[in-house]
Amino acid sequence: MKDFKKYYIVPAPPEEIYIALTNPLTLELWTGEPAEMSTEPGSEFSLWNGDIAGKNLEFEENKKIVQEWYFGDQEEKSIVTIKLHPHKKGTSVELIHSNIPDEDFEDFTEGWDESYFDSLIAFFEEK
Picture (cartoon, rainbow, N blue to C red):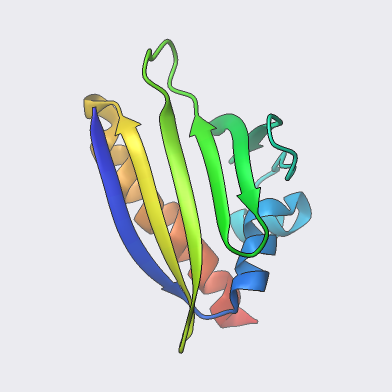
């Protein structure tokens, strides 16, 4: 199991980033795929046609999102924490993804960069 931590600068205020990560309609706009999402702790979510699925654990509006991501029969929970910090260029997004299975680590780190955050940043740059 491996952990991944990285910061991304997104050119929009934390309030807009929070909506983009938690509102299913906005998620669909920047991912280009159907999304199921709720800000209700304990609710299930699904992104990219189910390629990413899990349970929402905690929300702090405009500041923090904590989710459990599912990896088959994995014993240790894989937890994703996204913290939003105001930044002079928009928002500094702090990503911490813990307990990524070793065999999936490279795919997930590339996915965070190339699919998730590149798409989110491009969405706000085009606005």
